[in-house]
Every structure is written in C-alpha cells, then in structure tokens.
Image (cartoon, rainbow, N blue to C red; front, side, top):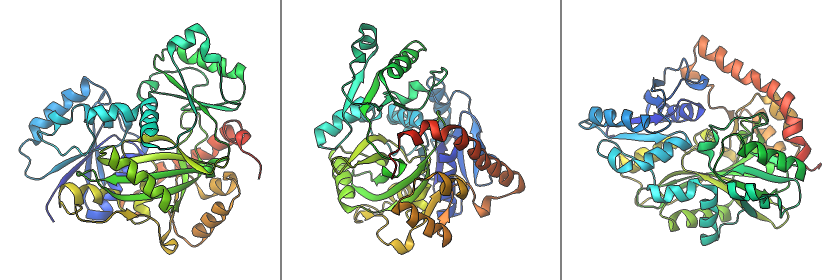
Length: 420
C-alpha cells in the first residue's frame, strides 16, 4: 500500500472516532490540528493534538494553514485533510484551491457548501430535487422587528433552530439550546426575543414538529467519491439523544438499520448535486404521512458516526481507497447493514442510561438483545489506547451523563413524547 498522512481538524469525540478508525484499519497514529484540547482526545496515544488558538475561524485558520502549506508542499506522500466540525468543513471548502497546493481536500466547492450548510439553502435544494423535509417558515431579523414572525402557521409544539449553526456558537443567553421545541405562543415570543437581543443576526428556522420520540429519528452516513459517485451508505437508528440544552439532538445510542428505498433516495440526491466526500443526514420518520423527512445535511461525518466503523464500514478507508489507492472508481455502492447477524449497537452513554431513558419499542428490544449478546461498542473505550489516566477521564465523562439525564430529560425530551 502507498504511504499516506491523514490530518484531522478538531479535537473532540469526532476526531477520536476518526483517529480510531485510522488506527483500526492501518495501525497508525494520526495528527490533529485544533483550537483547544478536549476530553475525548486527551491522554491518547493514537492521536496527537497540535493546538492553534482561533483555528476555527479566519483569519487565524488561513494564517496557520499557509504555514502548513509551506511545510507540506514537498511532502513525499499524500496528505489528506479531514474535517471533524461544521466550521472546519466551511473553511476547507472556502480555501480549497489554495490548500490543494499541498493537501488532498475531499470536500465540495464553496458555492455548493454555502447552499447546503444553510438550512434555508438545504431546503431549497431539497425542494428542487424532491427530498422531503418538514414544513418550514423562515424568521428574519426584519420579520422579528415588524412583528410578523409571530404568525405561527403550525400547531404547537413547534421546532425552532438557528439557520446558521456556526454563528450560533457565539450567541449566549439563559435558556440557550442547540434547538428548541416550543409549547405555546408566549414561549415562542420570549425565545425569539432573547435570540435577537443577544447578538444573533441570521435567520431562524421555524418548523412543524414531527411527533414521536427519539426512536423516530434516523441518521445516514454516505461516502461520495471524487467522481461524484456514492460508494457507501450506512443507516443508523438513534434510540436516545442528549437532553442537555447545548447538545440537544446529539445521538447517544444508535442501532444499525437498513432501508433500501431510503438508500436509493439519498444516493440519487447526492449524485444529482455532484457531491464529494462524507455526508451525514439527520432524518425523522413522520407517522402522519409515512415519509422520512430530512432535517439537515452535515458536510462531514458526525460526532456519533463511529457506529459506521463499528458495523464494518470503516470511515477512514473510504478516503484512502479513493484518494490514495484510487480503487473505488469501478466498485459498486455498498448498502450498509444488510446482514442482521453482523449488527452492533453503538453506545455514547452508560448502558443503564439507555435502559432507563430510551422509550420502549421493538427497536429497543432488538438493541437490548445486541447488548446482552455483547454485540456493542463505544467510540472512546478503545482497548489498544487505554491507560489509567484516559480510563478515569472517560469513566468520569460517561458518569456525568447521569446528572444530565436526571436534570434535563423530563423537561427537554419526555414531555414531547407520545405515550405508547
């Protein structure tokens, strides 16, 4: 095999999942460049974090990367840049042409990224290509100021989320969440007011709330090669999400799933828009019309996407086979999880939290059967990368979820679930 160098951008659990994927596939230690160090990658011997404060934004990002271009321009082997966060995906696409002087940059062009990274833009593309999405109203700063935002066309509860997830990171106020489920008009007016008086200037997405608990969600990862052909899709069935306000929507338990019709829908969409690289879709099944509704596309693998590697479709290998080995061109698309005998359950929380908080369903019963059969795994507890300090830190990180679920689950999750 030709030698290569992967470099990850970030320092969180997504970085660790990719580093572990590279280590499992090739036995290598990888380097990551990030703005800080975070718990999932601390004390690891499979990933080195090189800290560059301010790396998540320009001008610091391109300043650092121009130095890296000089350093790697004559590197003897291919160097692949892999984003592990929305901001990094945007920056890689924005500076793609310059970065390609020294690096492989397996991302879409900036014009397409600008459409897809914006929820408004994504829904416009969905409309154009026939991809179902929730009924949506856009709220702008001007409709907030003239009061017309308060005309809510959907029955409560409704969903509300920032259109621009990158600028949302800079907005802080009491009650701030990654996304909101709002029970009445008074709460709606209060939250929109807080958002726009605390520095947020972009649009908000107001949506029809699709009923059902976390087990109505689906997550789908796809890899699209440099010729814009889908080569792998792996569907996951989330059974539990994070209830913490700043992390709502993050999947904490994912069972493997298979749906050929859904795979074909996503494959057609990605190939029509000339996509490149890894894509991660958040989807929810709407029992009212029997359709899967697409919430968003992340232009990278997600923080919980190690479920893909766990189930046999190593996230790292697709980049290497495509850009280093050039072996994907004539390969058929892989529709993941066809064989239930090979299924493994991914856990991002302790087993007891899953058992206690996930809503009872047939999917939960199947997941518990996988758990009891030992067909289970996590991202961070990796035996070849475990020392006393790392083990204690990961145990502490997992233990903290007990407090989060006790504090937040009832108010942020359970009240919106229909009793079964």
